[in-house]
Image 1: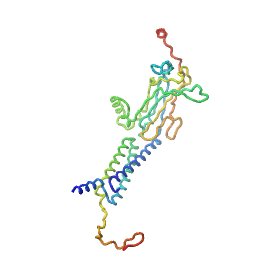
Image 2 (image 1 turned 120 degrees about the vertical axis):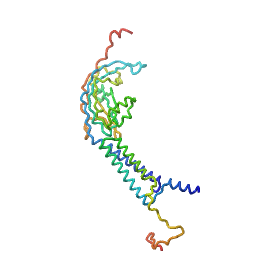
Image 3 (image 1 turned 60 degrees about the vertical axis):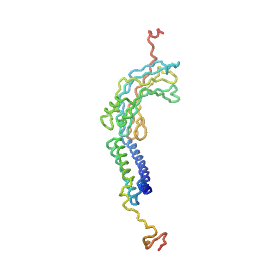
Image 4 (image 1 turned 180 degrees about the vertical axis):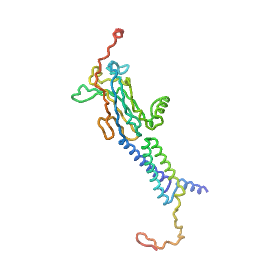
Length: 227
Length: 103
Protein backbone atom coordinates (compact mmCIF):
# COMPACT_ATOMS: atom_id res chain seq x y z
CA UNK A 1 0.00 0.00 0.00
CA UNK A 2 3.09 2.21 -0.19
CA UNK A 3 2.70 3.56 -3.72
CA UNK A 4 -0.27 4.50 -5.90
CA UNK A 5 0.17 1.51 -8.22
CA UNK A 6 0.11 -0.93 -5.32
CA UNK A 7 -3.02 0.70 -3.92
CA UNK A 8 -4.65 0.57 -7.36
CA UNK A 9 -3.98 -3.15 -7.61
CA UNK A 10 -5.22 -3.80 -4.09
CA UNK A 11 -8.48 -1.91 -4.55
CA UNK A 12 -9.15 -3.58 -7.88
CA UNK A 13 -8.37 -6.98 -6.44
CA UNK A 14 -10.82 -6.57 -3.60
CA UNK A 15 -13.39 -5.05 -5.98
CA UNK A 16 -13.41 -8.24 -8.06
CA UNK A 17 -14.02 -10.27 -4.89
CA UNK A 18 -16.91 -8.01 -3.84
CA UNK A 19 -18.40 -8.09 -7.35
CA UNK A 20 -18.26 -11.89 -7.38
CA UNK A 21 -19.91 -12.22 -3.98
CA UNK A 22 -22.67 -9.73 -4.83
CA UNK A 23 -23.29 -11.57 -8.10
CA UNK A 24 -23.54 -14.86 -6.21
CA UNK A 25 -26.10 -13.31 -3.85
CA UNK A 26 -28.11 -11.97 -6.80
CA UNK A 27 -28.11 -15.40 -8.42
CA UNK A 28 -29.16 -17.00 -5.13
CA UNK A 29 -31.98 -14.48 -4.66
CA UNK A 30 -33.77 -16.23 -7.55
CA UNK A 31 -34.40 -19.25 -5.36
CA UNK A 32 -36.34 -17.11 -2.87
CA UNK A 33 -38.75 -15.79 -5.49
CA UNK A 34 -41.82 -17.83 -6.25
CA UNK A 35 -42.35 -19.06 -9.79
CA UNK A 36 -45.81 -20.27 -10.61
CA UNK A 37 -46.24 -20.22 -14.39
CA UNK A 38 -49.58 -21.45 -15.62
CA UNK A 39 -51.10 -22.19 -19.01
CA UNK A 40 -54.83 -21.59 -19.29
CA UNK A 41 -55.30 -22.61 -22.90
CA UNK A 42 -53.09 -24.40 -25.34
CA UNK A 43 -54.89 -25.89 -28.29
CA UNK A 44 -54.56 -26.28 -32.02
CA UNK A 45 -56.77 -24.19 -34.23
CA UNK A 46 -55.84 -25.67 -37.60
CA UNK A 47 -53.65 -28.60 -38.54
CA UNK A 48 -52.56 -29.48 -42.06
CA UNK A 49 -50.01 -31.75 -43.62
CA UNK A 50 -48.61 -30.61 -46.96
CA UNK A 51 -45.94 -31.92 -49.29
CA UNK A 52 -42.96 -29.75 -49.98
CA UNK A 53 -39.22 -29.52 -50.51
CA UNK A 54 -36.65 -28.63 -47.88
CA UNK A 55 -35.23 -26.03 -50.27
CA UNK A 56 -35.88 -24.92 -53.82
CA UNK A 57 -33.37 -27.14 -55.66
CA UNK A 58 -34.09 -30.24 -53.60
CA UNK A 59 -35.56 -33.22 -55.45
CA UNK A 60 -36.63 -34.78 -52.17
CA UNK A 61 -40.27 -34.35 -51.27
CA UNK A 62 -41.15 -34.25 -47.60
CA UNK A 63 -44.31 -33.94 -45.61
CA UNK A 64 -44.64 -30.85 -43.49
CA UNK A 65 -47.06 -30.31 -40.63
CA UNK A 66 -48.52 -26.82 -40.50
CA UNK A 67 -49.92 -26.26 -37.04
CA UNK A 68 -51.62 -23.08 -35.88
CA UNK A 69 -52.61 -22.75 -32.25
CA UNK A 70 -54.13 -20.63 -29.50
CA UNK A 71 -52.23 -19.96 -26.32
CA UNK A 72 -53.27 -18.20 -23.13
CA UNK A 73 -50.53 -18.34 -20.52
CA UNK A 74 -49.38 -16.38 -17.49
CA UNK A 75 -45.61 -16.47 -17.10
CA UNK A 76 -45.44 -13.17 -15.20
CA UNK A 77 -43.94 -14.77 -12.09
CA UNK A 78 -40.79 -15.54 -14.10
CA UNK A 79 -39.97 -11.84 -14.26
CA UNK A 80 -37.85 -10.75 -11.31
CA UNK A 81 -35.07 -8.19 -10.95
CA UNK A 82 -32.57 -10.78 -12.16
CA UNK A 83 -34.50 -11.78 -15.29
CA UNK A 84 -32.87 -10.59 -18.50
CA UNK A 85 -35.18 -12.31 -20.93
CA UNK A 86 -37.46 -15.28 -21.20
CA UNK A 87 -37.42 -17.47 -24.28
CA UNK A 88 -40.83 -19.03 -24.82
CA UNK A 89 -41.38 -21.82 -27.33
CA UNK A 90 -44.07 -24.26 -28.31
CA UNK A 91 -43.12 -27.73 -29.45
CA UNK A 92 -45.10 -30.48 -31.10
CA UNK A 93 -44.28 -33.88 -29.66
CA UNK A 94 -45.18 -37.36 -30.76
CA UNK A 95 -43.90 -40.82 -29.87
CA UNK A 96 -41.31 -42.31 -32.21
CA UNK A 97 -42.23 -45.29 -34.38
CA UNK A 98 -40.32 -47.63 -32.08
CA UNK A 99 -41.61 -45.87 -29.00
CA UNK A 100 -42.44 -49.12 -27.19
CA UNK A 101 -38.83 -50.29 -27.47
CA UNK A 102 -36.86 -47.05 -27.07
CA UNK A 103 -39.31 -44.72 -25.31
CA UNK A 104 -38.09 -42.06 -27.75
CA UNK A 105 -40.15 -38.98 -28.50
CA UNK A 106 -40.04 -36.72 -31.53
CA UNK A 107 -39.99 -33.07 -30.63
CA UNK A 108 -39.98 -30.05 -32.92
CA UNK A 109 -40.44 -26.34 -32.31
CA UNK A 110 -43.33 -24.74 -34.16
CA UNK A 111 -43.23 -21.25 -32.63
CA UNK A 112 -41.02 -19.21 -30.34
CA UNK A 113 -40.56 -15.71 -29.01
CA UNK A 114 -38.19 -13.72 -26.82
CA UNK A 115 -39.72 -11.63 -24.05
CA UNK A 116 -37.23 -9.09 -22.74
CA UNK A 117 -37.33 -7.66 -19.25
CA UNK A 118 -37.37 -3.81 -19.23
CA UNK A 119 -33.77 -3.93 -17.95
CA UNK A 120 -32.78 -5.69 -21.19
CA UNK A 121 -34.94 -3.79 -23.68
CA UNK A 122 -31.89 -2.20 -25.25
CA UNK A 123 -30.68 -5.66 -26.29
CA UNK A 124 -33.79 -6.53 -28.28
CA UNK A 125 -33.05 -6.99 -31.98
CA UNK A 126 -35.77 -4.70 -33.35
CA UNK A 127 -36.04 -1.46 -35.28
CA UNK A 128 -36.05 2.01 -33.70
CA UNK A 129 -39.83 2.48 -33.82
CA UNK A 130 -40.57 -0.91 -32.28
CA UNK A 131 -37.85 -0.25 -29.71
CA UNK A 132 -39.46 3.02 -28.69
CA UNK A 133 -42.79 1.27 -28.32
CA UNK A 134 -41.23 -1.55 -26.30
CA UNK A 135 -39.53 0.86 -23.91
CA UNK A 136 -42.72 2.83 -23.53
CA UNK A 137 -44.67 -0.34 -22.71
CA UNK A 138 -42.61 -0.81 -19.55
CA UNK A 139 -43.75 2.60 -18.33
CA UNK A 140 -40.42 3.29 -16.62
CA UNK A 141 -40.75 0.29 -14.35
CA UNK A 142 -37.66 -1.85 -13.76
CA UNK A 143 -39.68 -5.05 -14.03
CA UNK A 144 -42.92 -5.50 -15.92
CA UNK A 145 -44.74 -8.74 -15.08
CA UNK A 146 -47.41 -7.94 -17.67
CA UNK A 147 -44.93 -8.97 -20.33
CA UNK A 148 -45.30 -12.55 -19.14
CA UNK A 149 -48.99 -12.63 -20.00
CA UNK A 150 -49.38 -14.29 -23.36
CA UNK A 151 -52.68 -14.30 -25.17
CA UNK A 152 -52.47 -15.61 -28.70
CA UNK A 153 -55.53 -16.45 -30.73
CA UNK A 154 -55.14 -18.61 -33.81
CA UNK A 155 -51.41 -17.87 -33.84
CA UNK A 156 -49.70 -18.75 -37.12
CA UNK A 157 -46.89 -21.28 -36.80
CA UNK A 158 -43.38 -19.90 -37.18
CA UNK A 159 -41.78 -23.13 -38.36
CA UNK A 160 -43.19 -25.95 -40.45
CA UNK A 161 -42.00 -29.23 -39.08
CA UNK A 162 -41.05 -32.50 -40.67
CA UNK A 163 -39.32 -35.74 -39.72
CA UNK A 164 -36.07 -37.31 -40.95
CA UNK A 165 -38.14 -40.03 -42.61
CA UNK A 166 -40.11 -37.39 -44.51
CA UNK A 167 -43.37 -38.99 -43.37
CA UNK A 168 -45.72 -37.18 -41.07
CA UNK A 169 -49.30 -37.61 -42.29
CA UNK A 170 -51.71 -39.51 -40.08
CA UNK A 171 -49.32 -39.39 -37.11
CA UNK A 172 -51.30 -39.97 -33.94
CA UNK A 173 -50.86 -38.87 -30.33
CA UNK A 174 -49.33 -35.50 -31.17
CA UNK A 175 -49.34 -32.93 -28.39
CA UNK A 176 -48.32 -29.31 -28.21
CA UNK A 177 -46.24 -28.33 -25.22
CA UNK A 178 -45.23 -24.90 -23.95
CA UNK A 179 -41.63 -24.48 -22.83
CA UNK A 180 -39.75 -21.56 -21.42
CA UNK A 181 -36.15 -20.75 -20.71
CA UNK A 182 -35.41 -18.05 -18.15
CA UNK A 183 -32.17 -16.21 -18.89
CA UNK A 184 -31.03 -14.25 -15.84
CA UNK A 185 -28.55 -11.39 -15.66
CA UNK A 186 -26.46 -13.42 -13.24
CA UNK A 187 -26.83 -17.12 -12.55
CA UNK A 188 -27.94 -20.28 -14.23
CA UNK A 189 -30.26 -20.72 -17.18
CA UNK A 190 -33.42 -22.51 -16.12
CA UNK A 191 -36.02 -24.29 -18.19
CA UNK A 192 -39.60 -25.29 -17.51
CA UNK A 193 -39.86 -28.07 -14.94
CA UNK A 194 -42.13 -31.06 -14.49
CA UNK A 195 -41.77 -31.12 -10.70
CA UNK A 196 -41.71 -28.45 -8.02
CA UNK A 197 -38.35 -27.32 -6.63
CA UNK A 198 -38.88 -25.29 -3.47
CA UNK A 199 -40.49 -21.98 -4.47
CA UNK A 200 -40.35 -22.91 -8.13
CA UNK A 201 -43.54 -24.64 -9.13
CA UNK A 202 -43.86 -26.84 -12.18
CA UNK A 203 -45.50 -25.39 -15.28
CA UNK A 204 -49.19 -26.12 -14.92
CA UNK A 205 -51.28 -27.42 -17.75
CA UNK A 206 -48.50 -26.91 -20.31
CA UNK A 207 -49.54 -29.76 -22.61
CA UNK A 208 -52.37 -29.70 -25.12
CA UNK A 209 -54.83 -32.48 -25.80
CA UNK A 210 -53.65 -35.30 -28.04
CA UNK A 211 -54.52 -34.91 -31.68
CA UNK A 212 -53.90 -36.71 -34.93
CA UNK A 213 -52.25 -35.13 -37.93
CA UNK A 214 -54.56 -35.32 -40.95
CA UNK A 215 -53.86 -36.94 -44.29
CA UNK A 216 -51.96 -34.94 -46.88
CA UNK A 217 -54.07 -32.12 -48.18
CA UNK A 218 -55.28 -33.11 -51.63
CA UNK A 219 -54.71 -30.69 -54.46
CA UNK A 220 -57.84 -29.33 -55.98
CA UNK A 221 -58.86 -31.19 -59.17
CA UNK A 222 -58.54 -28.03 -61.26
CA UNK A 223 -54.93 -27.39 -60.33
CA UNK A 224 -54.12 -31.08 -60.50
CA UNK A 225 -55.28 -31.21 -64.11
CA UNK A 226 -53.27 -28.22 -65.23
CA UNK A 227 -49.63 -29.06 -65.77
CA UNK B 1 17.47 21.61 -12.15
CA UNK B 2 16.15 18.92 -14.46
CA UNK B 3 17.05 16.31 -11.88
CA UNK B 4 15.03 18.10 -9.20
CA UNK B 5 12.08 18.35 -11.54
CA UNK B 6 12.31 14.64 -12.36
CA UNK B 7 12.42 13.84 -8.65
CA UNK B 8 9.24 15.83 -8.12
CA UNK B 9 7.51 14.11 -11.02
CA UNK B 10 8.55 10.74 -9.66
CA UNK B 11 7.25 11.59 -6.20
CA UNK B 12 3.85 12.56 -7.58
CA UNK B 13 3.65 9.50 -9.82
CA UNK B 14 4.68 7.07 -7.10
CA UNK B 15 2.38 8.64 -4.54
CA UNK B 16 4.11 7.28 -1.47
CA UNK B 17 2.36 7.42 1.89
CA UNK B 18 3.61 6.69 5.40
CA UNK B 19 3.01 3.60 7.54
CA UNK B 20 0.04 5.01 9.45
CA UNK B 21 -1.46 6.05 6.11
CA UNK B 22 -1.08 2.53 4.76
CA UNK B 23 -2.89 1.11 7.76
CA UNK B 24 -5.70 3.62 7.23
CA UNK B 25 -5.90 2.83 3.49
CA UNK B 26 -6.22 -0.89 4.21
CA UNK B 27 -9.10 -0.24 6.58
CA UNK B 28 -10.82 2.23 4.24
CA UNK B 29 -10.65 -0.12 1.23
CA UNK B 30 -12.09 -3.05 3.13
CA UNK B 31 -14.87 -1.06 4.75
CA UNK B 32 -15.98 1.04 1.75
CA UNK B 33 -15.94 -1.78 -0.80
CA UNK B 34 -17.69 -4.26 1.47
CA UNK B 35 -20.28 -1.64 2.37
CA UNK B 36 -20.78 -0.80 -1.30
CA UNK B 37 -21.46 -4.45 -2.04
CA UNK B 38 -23.96 -4.82 0.79
CA UNK B 39 -25.78 -1.58 -0.06
CA UNK B 40 -25.96 -2.32 -3.79
CA UNK B 41 -27.43 -5.77 -3.18
CA UNK B 42 -29.96 -4.62 -0.59
CA UNK B 43 -31.13 -1.57 -2.55
CA UNK B 44 -31.34 -3.62 -5.75
CA UNK B 45 -33.25 -6.43 -4.07
CA UNK B 46 -35.68 -4.17 -2.23
CA UNK B 47 -36.40 -1.95 -5.23
CA UNK B 48 -36.14 -4.94 -7.61
CA UNK B 49 -33.88 -2.99 -9.94
CA UNK B 50 -30.68 -4.66 -11.09
CA UNK B 51 -29.47 -1.65 -13.04
CA UNK B 52 -29.56 0.43 -9.88
CA UNK B 53 -27.60 -2.25 -8.02
CA UNK B 54 -24.95 -2.21 -10.73
CA UNK B 55 -24.77 1.58 -10.69
CA UNK B 56 -24.41 1.73 -6.90
CA UNK B 57 -21.73 -0.94 -7.00
CA UNK B 58 -19.71 0.81 -9.68
CA UNK B 59 -20.15 4.28 -8.15
CA UNK B 60 -19.01 3.04 -4.75
CA UNK B 61 -15.99 1.40 -6.31
CA UNK B 62 -15.11 4.56 -8.23
CA UNK B 63 -15.34 6.57 -5.00
CA UNK B 64 -13.07 4.09 -3.26
CA UNK B 65 -10.50 4.49 -6.03
CA UNK B 66 -10.62 8.27 -5.71
CA UNK B 67 -10.40 8.07 -1.93
CA UNK B 68 -7.53 5.65 -1.79
CA UNK B 69 -5.28 5.76 -4.83
CA UNK B 70 -3.94 9.36 -4.82
CA UNK B 71 -1.52 10.17 -1.95
CA UNK B 72 -3.89 12.53 -0.12
CA UNK B 73 -2.18 14.68 2.55
CA UNK B 74 -3.95 12.91 5.41
CA UNK B 75 -2.09 9.70 4.53
CA UNK B 76 1.21 11.50 5.21
CA UNK B 77 0.62 12.92 8.67
CA UNK B 78 3.07 10.61 10.41
CA UNK B 79 6.30 10.68 8.38
CA UNK B 80 9.05 8.36 9.54
CA UNK B 81 11.76 10.19 11.49
CA UNK B 82 15.02 8.74 10.26
CA UNK B 83 18.27 9.14 12.17
CA UNK B 84 20.61 11.66 10.63
CA UNK B 85 23.34 10.39 8.37
CA UNK B 86 26.62 10.11 10.30
CA UNK B 87 25.01 9.77 13.73
CA UNK B 88 23.87 13.26 14.46
CA UNK B 89 21.73 12.03 17.32
CA UNK B 90 22.80 10.18 20.44
CA UNK B 91 22.04 6.47 19.98
CA UNK B 92 19.19 5.15 22.14
CA UNK B 93 20.06 4.12 25.68
CA UNK B 94 19.15 0.47 25.29
CA UNK B 95 18.83 -1.09 21.88
CA UNK B 96 17.78 -4.73 22.07
CA UNK B 97 18.28 -7.00 19.06
CA UNK B 98 17.73 -10.75 19.44
CA UNK B 99 17.65 -10.35 23.23
CA UNK B 100 21.14 -8.93 23.27
CA UNK B 101 21.42 -5.36 24.29
CA UNK B 102 23.69 -2.98 22.50
CA UNK B 103 25.14 0.07 24.07
